Image (cartoon, rainbow, N blue to C red; front, side, top):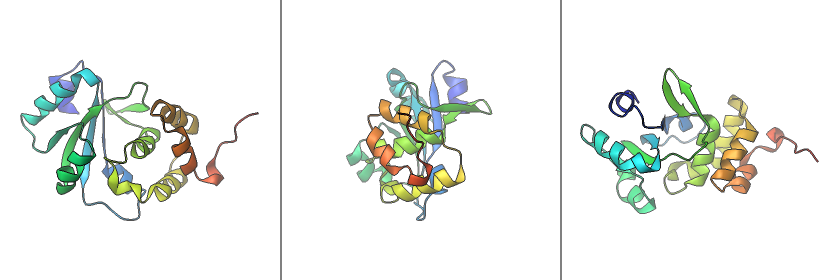
Length: 165
């Protein structure tokens, strides 16, 4: 994040770690990836800038690239496009993903987040027990990712916000 801020100060970004999801999982994945999301037109610029001094940097990997290369690494940096109006928050001058964004993203991108797919129900259940989740914010973002029904089905019944008639 500090590198992005210093080297490319005008780039809109969001950075978070897959390790954060581990807190909500029963089985711990070996890999810990850093997800760097940037404006679509800036992905390659950020990729090549980070690739200059870091190894294991991947540009928007598809399922096949994930299976062939990413799953073989314990640590990697993944550059992806930032979805507009994604739930992000500024913490210590670093723009990072809110839990609502992370929960939707692991549903929306099963090819990338393969390690989490078998535990989606547990992840959602634990997240809803441990932290306040803004369901309206999460569902709005799920709509932008075209995953409304999939995300809604994972919200624990005891936590579902009743829709007004």
